[in-house]
Amino acid sequence: MWSRNQRQAAARLFLRRLGLVALFVLVVFAAAGVWGVYQKEQESAERRAEAEAARTDLEERQGQLSADIERLESDRGLEEALREQYSLAERGEQLIVIVDTAATSIEATSTSRGWLGRIFHWPW
Image: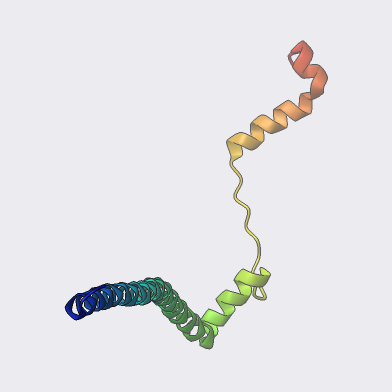
């Protein structure tokens, strides 16, 4: 049989080992919690960066829209926008076509001969 001291020593050894196992389980749970917090922090940092990029983009767009609104509030800006969008012209405006004279004379001679003149090269 075991003596009283031997039983107490065995009980203490068992309790120490049980305490170590409980401490190990507690450390594992704490590490899992810290890992989860770390992952959430990484995800929130990525989302924050995306939100910052979206914010700067929206601020740029707001600036551009404000400039467009200011331009459209003036008569000249409104006229430019209408001319650009609908290809409008004012009363009295006419279309001017600039034609290169050298190119038209070559085309005129080649079309006046026709396809027979190009094939046979008759002097006319």
